[in-house]
Length: 467
Image (cartoon, rainbow, N blue to C red):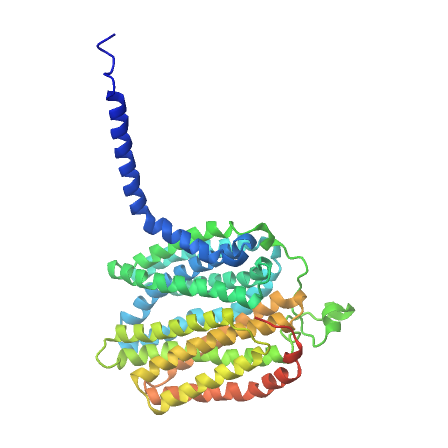
């Protein structure tokens, strides 16, 4: 028994040694985990600030960031397959085919998506999760198609676009349900959009790195991201499934048709309940979205054939894409903090600015001016879209606001598709292409400026602040 006893002080030394060793292990573990946990806490603190955590808006911001990261992974994979893998002339044909097979049906399906989702107001979390799951499964289908080059690439890409649009429509309906106290819809939308842009900026180089490993790997990454988004969708508060107080936008021009007994006589959904300011703002935004689609495809082919001085085609496209992304992020950030009683004036101003930039870039075509134009276009598009959101919030009756948001998004997407088609068809002449872009912008600005300024003079000053 005596031999089995531990000498006095030995146990304390053993415990102390074990404690010191365990403490060292925990310290090393904390040091290794800090970059991850610290970053996660920082992101959570930013997304949940100013009451967004309590209202659930922070969860939506994180979900939209996941959505943006997954979409850019698929974009990287498809761009490398459809665009970079073949000669320029063949690439134009393949991209045109891609637009015809995917975007054309999408423009026909897009107007249907909003009304269909309007009929599912009590399953918004499930609808967002379903859109995530659909894109996850389609990413796996695409992972095989990008290697074999089979025609299933195109219907799968169409499915991704439709699911992405469905997610966007539902997200527009969810945001008003998650507004923190003192938040406007514009400020909330800008935060959600900025979260998606930041995630896109982070995921794009990761996707490019995965693409260097193999054509399938960005799609495998998209699969993992969208699966995570599916589960994150159900973490949103249950109140987003509520449709209390909502209705559908109708083809009517007065309050009697919205609230009165004739409301049921109007069967076709539309945007005529929103007022002249919103319709003109939507027209101006359509011109800017057309420009975005045009520049995306026109500059993609132009810079591939004639890259920026001293740069490769990929680097040239990267510079232009970064400039556009920075401009878009800056416009979203400005919109989050801008206080204005007249969003009409903001739209008129930014369209005039980007029109001037397009005219200068067409007259003195060069690498620097092209990068400046894409940055200005990104900034203007973001700020004009937030101003359109402000007008929808200000002028559209609450009963039909969600429906109006969904239909405006559809029209803007169709404008982007049309701009992209024109960009593909244009000859690869920089001055000529940007001159056409300036002409389209001039028409969009001229046809909307009078109505917007009139609205600002007669109605904007008397209404409440919108941002």
